[in-house]
Amino acid sequence: MKNILRSLFAVLLMTITASSFAQQQMHQRSPEERAQRQTMWMQKNLGLTEDQNKKVYDIMLYHAQQADNDKSMPPTPDTKAEKKQLKRDTDAELRAVLTGDQYQKYQQHVQEMKAKRQDRKSEMPY
Image 1 (cartoon, rainbow, N blue to C red):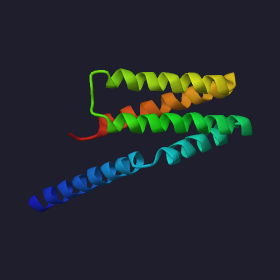
Image 2 (tube, rainbow, N blue to C red; image 1 turned 90 degrees about the vertical axis):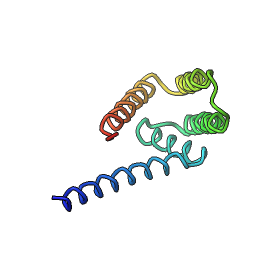
Image 3 (tube, rainbow, N blue to C red; image 1 turned 120 degrees about the vertical axis):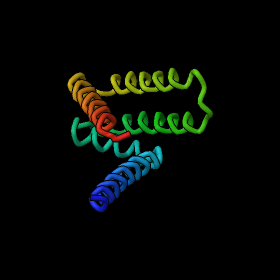
Image 4 (tube, rainbow, N blue to C red; image 1 turned 180 degrees about the vertical axis):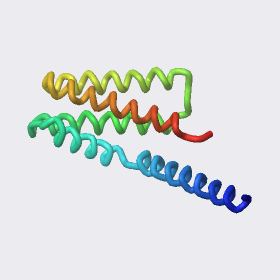
């Protein structure tokens, strides 16, 4: 019985470690890599024009750089508000570049990703 419990514990520990490592790798991407990945997704799924592609990349790069700068600063009571404002700014800039249909598809994707993050959080053992 002890061996089974040890084995289960080892599997659980490896799962948590692997999940944590994958999350760390994602967060270790440079702003350029994150902007490129986001732009590529939008190009593929939203059918961006060349002009839109350039503008979207510039928007995503700028905001990824700002997010990294915010991470390097010590947390303050205003940090959460600043992050929300950065998201609102990004959203407003993308809305100005994308067509109505593209923007709607983008918003749907954002909501799906948000739901997946919530699901992962609720599944994590504490």
